[in-house]
Image 1 (spheres, helix red, strand yellow):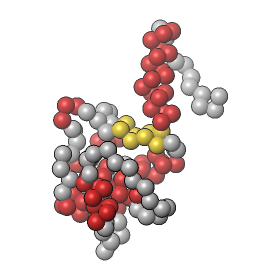
Image 2: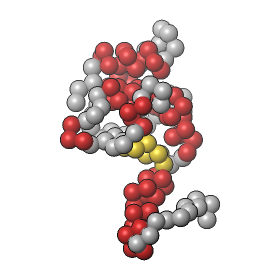
Image 3: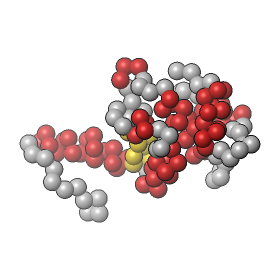
Image 4: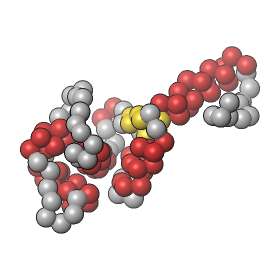
Length: 131
């Protein structure tokens, strides 16, 4: 899959203030479709660059072969920010086969609950994250 400068321009219009644009380092990150680590200081634009990539990927859905996009975070705050900033632009991104959530919600949804149902042959009645 190829991300173009036109794709990035589209994301800039949605996410940045008029007159702002992504620098070359952020553009390189957004275009990179390989596994990549992004490390930078707070306020450097990591989240906005990630959101731009997600906005662009949503325009290319559905992906070939029925595969989805998986976004995992340690915190609900990060997931809430993603939802708040781009969910209205990206409805397909927040639907199956894609998943955006915490590591814990992923484990619950795709591992723990199916395992419980399979082993005990009944549906789970309550999942208490506080316990």
